[in-house]
Image (tube, rainbow, N blue to C red; front, side):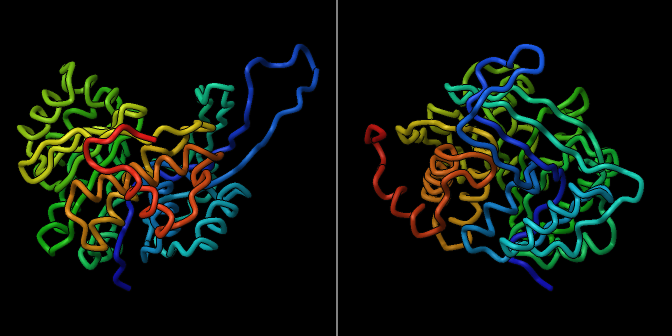
Length: 315
């Protein structure tokens, strides 16, 4: 089945608790305001948010054959994500992350690696990518995708007419070499500022974007967190402001930005306007816990986007 969007790569289970400013001593107990569990990851989180925004979404990823894996699939399917290409790896646990969020929204990470990075470029995945309108790649660092298979997959998808976007998560030592393979086949690359600066050696979004353009990326969006984003797509660089919100949890805000951007493109928005929608989606997510946060859907995201026009101060 052809999808509007196929997400490929990392899938995890997030367990988010807030606020956790200190750990109780010994075996003590501290009451907190809330706890949430949700599918996440550069592919899984983007797929979940995109489905919430009304896109027809497929996901190519891997979970373990444990209770966490069954829960992740169920939660994705309940939101409308097609999990036919979410493979179950026997004898492996599902990747999972515990995020104790403090009162300021900061999120230290406790990650238990598992099957989540074992997505591959099987014939079924390639076929699905070649029939999708958009392919979002969150597989950098995956041992079955790095070194050539991922780049070949994106090359075929793009040649078939898909718009290809790419994001990162905690890029390792081989990430830059992998980006050299991937970016010539990527229409829009969307790293965070920390990732972009670390990989490029640049100290400004403008210089970082130029670096990734030189590696072959068609367009670059650098996510700047509370400072908004830098959009360099179609030769019209622009800085966009962020919304002034009360942050609850920034978990998956980067993935939600990507999903919002793709949803905007899918609905006919030009890239800068689609980036504004991505910012509005991320702002809603940041006001609640876990991957979906306080996200209401596409219509609410458009209303929030329209409340912040170019050149205004975020409100």
